[in-house]
Image: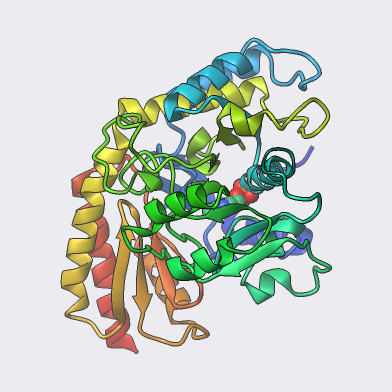
Length: 426
Ligand SMILES: *Cc1c(COP(=O)(O)O)cnc(C)c1O
């Protein structure tokens, strides 16, 4: 029998010895999670300020989502799409009504959903827009993050993510994020079929564009007859204070209340919190005029649309609207940035706090190649709060959206105390 219980150091040694080294984790070994908290193998409790890259928006092990998982696991787990199952149709109806689209294509991981969107976009370009086959161009943005497959890294700006993984996929034009003039120039090329954009660039360090950027991307796409594809895998599902980040400053409280007027993408890509971090569930949503290019045999996934995924995702979305998590994200996000902005004035170590809702980041006053942000994260861990640097000198703060105001203040206390102590030491 394989022994699964290990001490902290043993667990780290095991991963180092037997696992590929494709991540560089903080030295903490987690064994339990509940709501905004996680516990390590020694029983020490931490606030989770990463939320598994915003997959656990609903909080760790949300009882309603776990119940949906267990109930469905006892009945039926996987049929493949060779047959119908009695959950998928209900899920498809639920999610399409929830986000206001005709159809959904269910996948598992975020990268798969992005790949799916790119394939749909190209096929639409050839079959509906009349672009000559193999000539389609999709516009993407500098510093993007859309996943790790060969096609997706083909248009990454991250040298480490690309090095020695070529040859790459053609047909992408990269323009500067938040630069509408550059976008319009790129759209004037021949054979453009679509634009793929993150409403806020999470991995790049929570880059929030100007307010008019996303609405203008939408209208430029309309003007040049290109599909507007929004990757809301990290920003969606209430994280930034509205159901979707493309909703801008919409004060929605449950599902989208202004379906007609919000900046609606032609293709919406979701993942991560779509399952509350319980199961890999991703989705591509579009209307019939776009989704109809997909016909039997053109695309698929053995696990995509499985009954567990459907049952879990329905419940995960229900929790978001029932608990009005976007309202809480909006309120706590404001509080967080207010406190950090005040705190910045007392320290040389942070230059900037930015973000929207509960997707925020602080920029550390040091070179991106320095270990300062990492060292601060290690100190935060020692003080009971888990966060991870992104792009060297930036620390992202993204707690579960079920946090209370009191808990958030306690977390701000931890962050301020840790950074003040750190500054004294160095
Ligand atoms: C995480 C993420 C992805 C990739 O999702 P995986 O499930 O890791 O494949 C794609 N786009 C964005 C914006 C993400 O944050």
